[in-house]
View 1 (cartoon, rainbow, N blue to C red):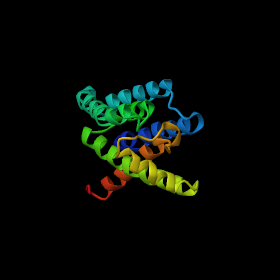
View 2: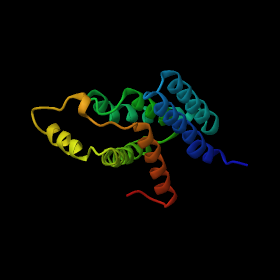
View 3: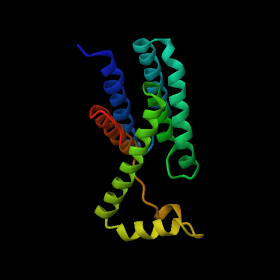
Length: 170
């Protein structure tokens, strides 16, 4: 029998993130219907497993997901679907867990972007775009590399889960 804590920490987030990754890889976007279903699953499961008293903490986690990702969405460095996916996942965690997962996802996103650029023979373009971002002449959207950030979110969650299993944070 699966322990209810394992269900809320591993199975449900894994299902939500895997669905987001599949949707993102297939369509290059995360659909609102998926986000809404994921959010409802997270809130209902959190309420059933931990009671209605867990909802204020879930609200804090959703707020943390929103505020930590909004600047990147406004800067067009992150898609709004990725932000919504993180917010849909948030009710299952503490707000501090969301911050750690997002931090790890940013690291994974950078690593995946570098690897993808190298495999596609665009490492030079990546360096030029990175340098241009610091100057007054920003590169055009067409020359920027992008990755499905949902994959980085999945890896960020898995990294955070691994650190929790090891008994601590970095």
